[in-house]
Amino acid sequence: MDDISVETIYTKAIEMLMLYGPKFLLAIFVLVVGWWFIGRIANMTEKSMAKVKFEAGLTHFLVSFISVILKVLLLISVASMIGIETTSFIAMLGAAGLAVGMALQGSLANFAGGVLILFFKPFKIGDVIEAQGHMGKVVEIQIFVTILLTYDNEKIIIPNGALSNGCVKNKFAEPTRRVDIEFGISYQDNVLRAREVLMAVLNEYELVLKGDEAKKPIVHVSQHGDSHIGMLVWAWVDSENYWPVYFGLYERVKIAFDKENITIPFPQRDVHIHQFPGK
Image (cartoon, rainbow, N blue to C red; front, side, top):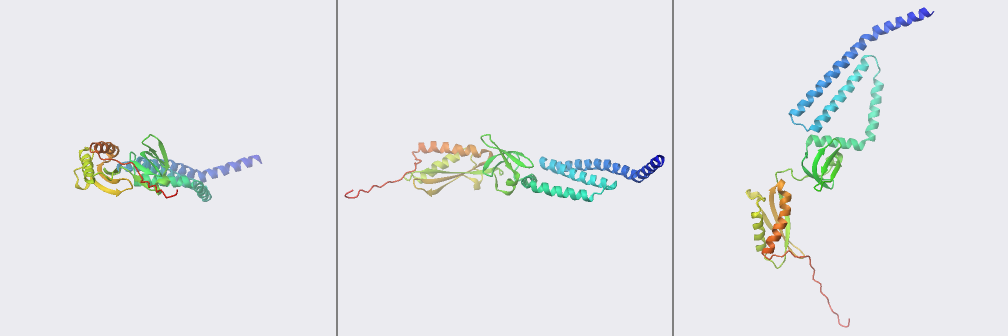
């Protein structure tokens, strides 16, 4: 009886080996060749993106994403070749993916925002942007967050979902910018003389652009305030000179006004006291 059992088991094993052996060997061959082929596709994709100067972060992410997707499909195909039922496995993966997606809604929004930022490039590393109430230099663009460095060396980390869906000011995206500053003078001062002094300061400042007719410095009378006349200065500068000119004009105008006895008035009010009889 034992001899019959061993012989039966041996016969069944030979039958299974003959039935599944070629499929198993073919599946191993497909797995090895497919894995190598996916690696080649990933390398070719990375080189193609490098030639068209894709953002490095986006290139790395897309290549990794394509590689993972292709490898998952390859494993499912190999499992199907050796007779493993993959329908329930795929359904389980789909349910797990849905559950993970619902649990990570915020992270997925940041992930999608990071892809959009890296693809459309509303700003790049080195740009100075203002967004979500913060302003700073972009030092790193990751898939989930963007990192800014402020002028006083604080590090600001902003989620990419908020950046991609909100307003972003790229402060120095253009080669030139206009500096707008209003200087107040007293009502007793001569407006025409104040304009001449301001224009002289702008024309003598070497960092202020003067060649282009559309970008020549201009001085306007901007308002009649409660205690001053507003003199608005428009000065075009190269973007990298914006802050030096912005702060430099305050100093130069104050010195020029002092030489010409043009006053920058303090806020003031006239108070009238009425004396009533018998009080």
